[in-house]
Image (tube, rainbow, N blue to C red):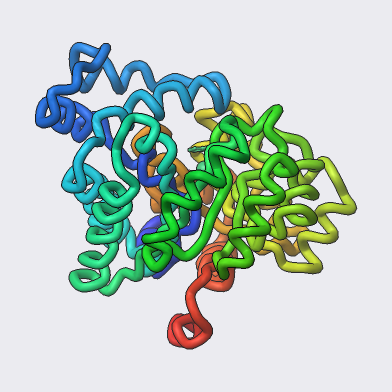
Length: 326
Ligand code: HPA
Ligand code: ZN
């Protein structure tokens, strides 16, 4: 069967990856040592063994704890470079990468430190691999809108280092409506806007992300199948969904990969893409997401072509770049 190698070799864009979610246990331990941060785990193996999640929140607790070893510009560079090196090996030619500044600024890390470390890794990936890597600043939705406004303000001196904003962290109880004003400000600033919605939350949160935040893409969005009118709208407007199959299994959104609804979403005409979300925590980078999903759902070469095509269509690359990928 040649399909797995086709999936690995085909050029693709990755549009839903949290840079803090690419921090492998080995690098967490290395940075903990380098920065004299103590960890509540005895070894890399003990930390990895703790990666068993029951829902989104049980993952987020460990994900924020893991990020506590990141202090200096070099740390952010090293984390992003490790991801970009892996992405290039996966034939990712364009990546739009989420980062969570509040996770770091709340610990006293300056905005400049984290943004510059990430940016320099993106620059180097372009030079060395020809991989275009862009940053998307995410607001943590469990925090207040006021906190999001302050974060935007702190990031504005570095406006040219990121292309857009997103919304992540604990979804239930934190609807998009909570961030309507800060997203309006971001749009005025010419930033692209996306939002996590319909990962665990109801279809109503997807409606809010579209109507109130004017989100250009929906991150996850798999709960849309519960709302036929919403499905029709997503198909008609070709609103991209950045779906993350292995993430959905690890966080118990679906019981097994064979029960994942990605094929239903594709069959309904939605612009679905395949992504890794937090690959260090969920057991696979983007190519493992493709290969395991295709095996579990019995997808075919035409689906591979469609998903790679969608990943470029859904990207924020400029028209000339999209033309070059055709
Ligand atoms: N959902 C919400 N917040 C996140 C995720 C996710 O899948 N990954 C990292 N932060
Ligand atoms: Zn995510």
